[in-house]
Amino acid sequence: MAPAVEITEEEISLEQMMQRARSSQAGAVVSFLGTVRNDGIEWMEVEAFRDLALSELEAIRQEAMSRFSLQAAEVAHRTGNLAVGEAIVAIVCSAAHREDAFSGCRYILEQLKSRAPLWKKEISAEGGRWVEGE
Amino acid sequence: MAPAVEITEEEISLEQMMQRARSSQAGAVVSFLGTVRNDGIEWMEVEAFRDLALSELEAIRQEAMSRFSLQAAEVAHRTGNLAVGEAIVAIVCSAAHREDAFSGCRYILEQLKSRAPLWKKEISAEGGRWVEGE
Amino acid sequence: MRVKVLAFAGFREILGREREVEMQGDASIRELLEMFASCSPRFREAASEPFCALRDHVLLMVNRKRIDAEKDLYRILADGDELAIFPPLAGG
Amino acid sequence: MRVKVLAFAGFREILGREREVEMQGDASIRELLEMFASCSPRFREAASEPFCALRDHVLLMVNRKRIDAEKDLYRILADGDELAIFPPLAGG
Image 1 (cartoon, each protein chain N blue to C red):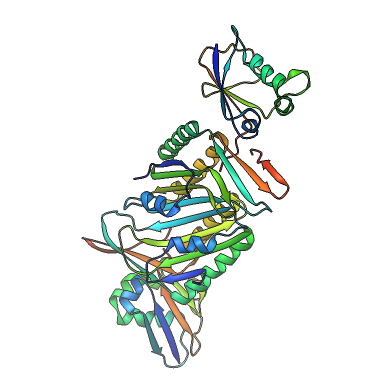
Image 2 (cartoon, chains in turn blue, brown, yellow, purple):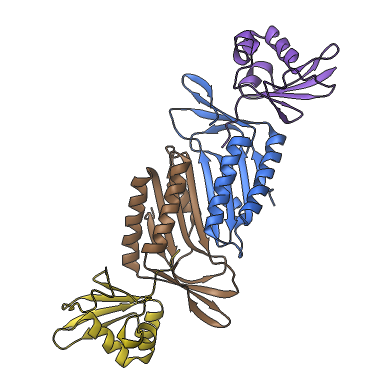
């Protein structure tokens, strides 16, 4: 079984993450998929401070699990060169009730953006540009 | 291509809904899956006022599309007899940005619960019980 | 005058999914419900409070538009109208 | 004294992903950064403001703990420390 937190050069399989997160105790499963949007870019390069990002994502995941009584939480972040439309990040949270599943998914996403050492560069015909953090 | 709003006796394929909702213009895809939770029940029976539910879901979908600038929105509700763990409802929203995708998904779910003529009955060893609306 | 009656969830289990009802002359929604109550003690039990009030959880539609159970109960039905009876919605 | 330096994103493109740096005697974080700036005009351009201040978007970690660029810049590095240099996070 794949780990609940992943940083991978391979394409993310949201389907497998959903399967792992579903259970007979979970009445609600919420997923977020962030993909490379076509803003006139040709591809995107994603870079990680890999082992630190993994431990930070695992810490965020555990915070979400306990704050929102999640049944399961899965996080995957892609690295390497991504084409338009490919998944950059995927998050799946399951809980007994929908409020918790939504809140858990939002929490993981916002914390990931502010705490996980990951960077994106957009490459267009004009050249490359590192995306500025929010 | 399946319609964007569906009430079906067949198992819901969230994967196909995701595929239809993804696009190069959508940077964010949010999904909600509501499943039969094991509260000591044996199965669940779901009933619809079918054509009215379809038109209501389509109205809700269109409201969400314009309120939250969605790129796509997909809704499917299952009817018939469902086993524990099976999907009752699935919603997928895609948008340029994550806020809109989350808001659209929440909006469709809450409106569906309050406006779509659908009912659930939980069948346990002790007998059946129609679920009370929220 | 013929009216189509649709019932869902608990009311479907009592009244059946769909039936055509033939009434003599004009009839209000209330009269139609009273007829069901007099034919079916189970329906009376499920739908009515003492003193002939409708239970809160009985929702009504005429021709797919919600009916206010307090204000519109004396509304006269027209030939071909469709009355739907159901408990509070519980989808999702 | 040997220090490992990791750089990410734009700083990785300038300094390389990872390098070992040998310093004579004690050295502060600031001295290490000044050394990079003096060897690499691109790094000086990317990381420093006039009057030797660090640009806001230069983030630093020593041994995986964030360093306050104002208060901790004179901190003396120890043998075996790992210094990481990167711009604001932009994952997700």
